[in-house]
Length: 281
Image (tube, rainbow, N blue to C red; front, side, top):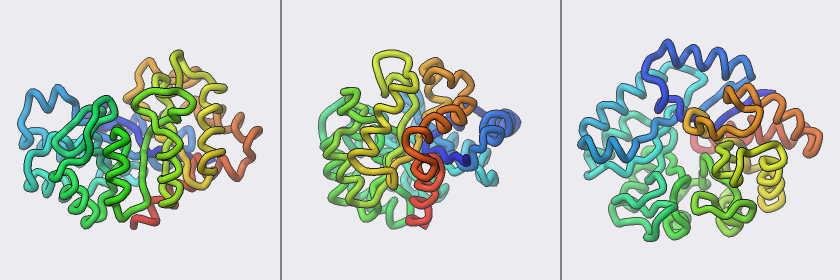
């Protein structure tokens, strides 16, 4: 079964094309992964250490590593470092498919999952400019206030690349049923993260993953859910049987098919993310 992944921190981990190709060939293509959203995560260390110009130069170099790879879709995690609209213009020129406004903490764009506060005026204007240039704002890492304000502002089906269900595991980074319903109403997309600390208080196993999938299926159905694994950002927090990232996917999907059927798991593993991309194209 083919697999599309809405969030992989590949560009955060790798700095050269040889390592990227090795990862793609050995861990992705061999496991029928045909599309991954290759995120570059702008860390708080970078923000504290470098100015926006240097960060933007680094992002541009990362983009060049994957721009000609069919399997890779360039995305950015945490554009909260930008200070002015000219910074935003440089991001827009690189045409990432999607960007997040935060990484858990407040920025001058929006409120992060671990803090309070909503969208700033700068953030609202940035969202309008991004969408005017066909760039999706990914609601992953937003707090609920910012999410709700964004939902009233956006013109797109809402996209959440990697998250988990708050009703199954109550942590700030997860999203609740009200948010799930809003995403469903916009015919959006939710990627289930396979980062154990977003799924449970222990290393996640099949039963844990299935509980989150079952909840998603009950609240919003299989037409709007997929995977946003967060591989290359999960490290030792991968679930059981995922010691080498996608090597665990074939077995997971085979077991899920027994509970939900081939058609539903095919949608989740592959078709729903492709359909979402086609809506935005």
